[in-house]
Length: 122
Image 1 (cartoon, one colour):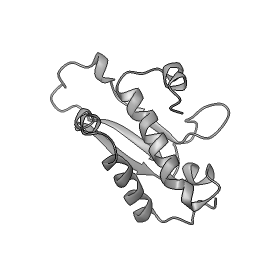
Image 2 (cartoon, helix red, strand yellow):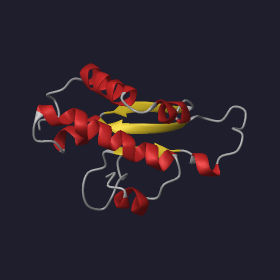
Image 3 (cartoon, one colour):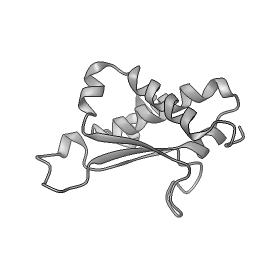
Image 4 (cartoon, helix red, strand yellow):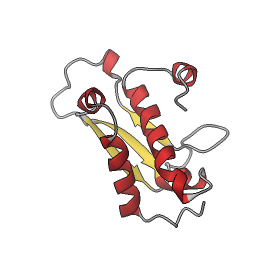
């Protein structure tokens, strides 16, 4: 899909709607994780093959203690243009956003890439 077909504000609403569909316990677990949207990943970031659709930055909940004063919050970043390039139809955007969001939340909860694949969250 042409990455310009969905504007930033509309994409932000899709992300917010996807988050709201998650179970309450997941939303509560992510209360201290900032969820953001950027157009593209930073240069040099991402897998050797394929598109980088999202990224979790932080310490997973399974390894986290008390947050140090003044430290930056953990974050999940969804990359709008790669996600739009990864879908064929506008109708598929919401499903792809939700899948990427779930994948990155899995990382925030301490799941490895292998475990997420086993669970079908990729």
